[in-house]
Amino acid sequence: MSQLTLLSPLGELTVSENGGAIVALDWGRGRDQERTPLLAAAVAQLQDYFDGTREIFDLPLAPSGTDFQKRVWASLRAIPAGQTRSYGDLARQLGSAARAIGQANGSNPIPILIPCHRVVGAGGALGGYSGGEGPSTKQWLLDHERRAYGSRAEPVSELPLGLSRVGQRGTMLR
Image (tube, rainbow, N blue to C red; front, side, top):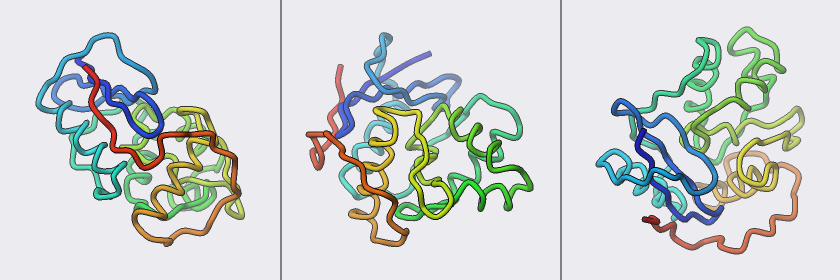
């Protein structure tokens, strides 16, 4: 599996490729750095996203999961940048329970590219997030999208961020 790390406003992110598709995005630096054309494209698109110039990712994604998880993740990709949906909304859409949606969301191996951060609790409550520094990372991503792509979503409760590199263009690390 090839990996490439970039420096983002949220810290180091590592994108992994296998079989010609992106299979993971992890916080931190990956150990197997290799610049493939696909990983270079993923890094460039993520940099554009953090710069506020890309709303939609155009990359082949192959997350590993159950059929149900893949249905949930496909639904997440349909949520426009700057908007949110509740766990309940997705549960009704997919004929499932909100708790199952939350579990699938938490198992997403490709956060940001599959935007699990766009799912919030009932009444707009932030809910959990398994990436980065947890809910503060989710809040940063939602705020970033509202600033970059418009205020099309209802605000969620504010959290202190403590993130110092907001607004800086991500750079690829070798």
